Length: 88
Image 1 (cartoon, rainbow, N blue to C red):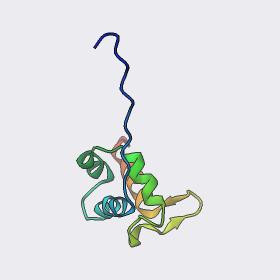
Image 2 (cartoon, rainbow, N blue to C red):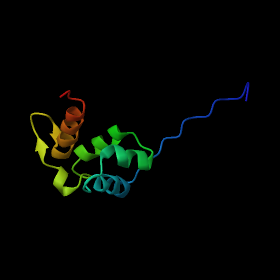
Image 3 (tube, helix red, strand yellow):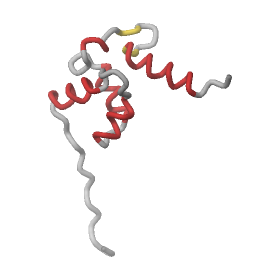
Image 4 (cartoon, rainbow, N blue to C red):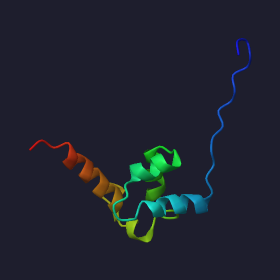
């Protein structure tokens, strides 16, 4: 409405259990972080951030690659994305 005060943006807050649940969904075979992000209406970067945190990441995703600072799952997803754009 013209002349009215703009509404303040409301940020969603996720509990630790919700973050664990979202991160756990990414470890299912054939499921990408992007798919989970779209399903939950989240930015994929937020899920990647939570996957780096040992409190929320599934047990199989906490193998850290020290030279990259990424979890194994993140590195695999990044490599897959690079392969998809590589020319034959």
